Length: 107
Image (cartoon, rainbow, N blue to C red):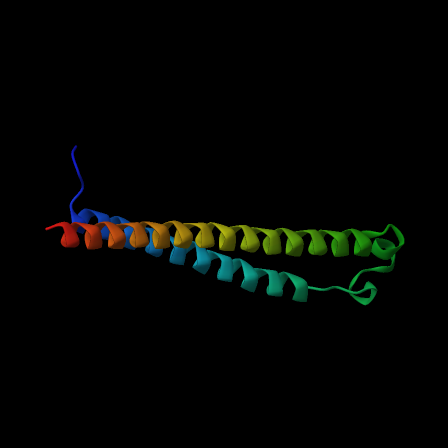
């Protein structure tokens, strides 16, 4: 394919930043879903006496906590991916800037 042009490199770096923004946006959505999940509480009052007697309220509370925890973990993972993409883009941008600067000094 040959050496990529400056426009190709710039487009690739921009794409990394765009992808990072997408992952960060999805992390924000999972954060919002976690807050909703944590708010979906049901107390013993909302369950029938029989449901409470067999422990259904405890099962519900455990499921709610597990779901909220998974959403929080997913958000953290998505944030990590966004961070890694930004770090890569920053590195490529710095490398490109240094290379261009060196070439201008040579010519």
